[in-house]
Image 1 (cartoon, rainbow, N blue to C red):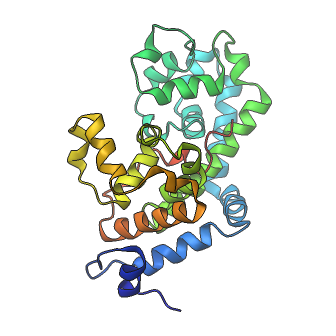
Image 2 (image 1 turned 120 degrees about the vertical axis):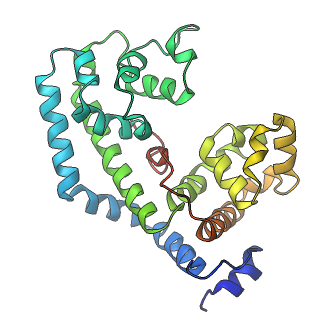
Amino acid sequence: MTLNATLASSLFGYTAPSAGSDPAAAIAMLKRATAPGAEAKGVAHERKDPVVITAMAQFDKALAHAKDLKSALGDPRVLAVLLPGVGLADQMAYPGLAQRALVADPTAKKGILTQVDAKWKTAATTLGLFGKGLDGLKDPALQQKLKDNYVAYQYQKSLDAQQPGISDALYFISNASAKAGNVYNVMGDRILRRVVTGALELPQQLAVQPIQDQAKAITNRLPMDKLKDPQQVYKVAQRYLLVTAQNPPASTPPDIATLAMSLRV
């Protein structure tokens, strides 16, 4: 059975998009991306890409010549792999912040990690560099996991280049059930929130309303218990892609590094 715009509308409650977009292609790509072995195959392909190979070689070279942890975290060759590897691909313009935040104590009740986005604290916890110096970053196991995450990031980035929003949808499928039943848990995860509000076609202005009103707007349209059902989760992801096909983002979302990888370090 061929999925066209009319059928997509009847199946998912989706408004037929304007000429030029292709909801059928979005759904077909999600199906391919979630097929058994698809991610492993895609990541293996990215690992052979010359750009990826060069970036990882430069990462190794920069670490080998770094004098200390601060200089390593200020080197763009290190950050090019490390930041995507810990979900901070959108923070490349802030090496000074990386030098401070990624070496801070993530358990401290005061300090820089309490003043910046929570994803920095997550990254600092993941890396575990507090009090370890350069040797902590040079740990072979950590380096390998950062590289693996970087390659996975590149794979997710390539998917979004083909179909905007696909990496969001994959992340949602993998993680929504863990937050099912509590709308505030969903709202607290920026990607889950983006998928849910996008699928429900809630206006961006919702973000300026009181948190309770935001929660009510979501749960009135999507009871959170539905996210315990994998089929319902998949359906929400499909609808998000259909909406995104109609209104593609101006650029790739900055946090795709955290999607299918889910910070494997």
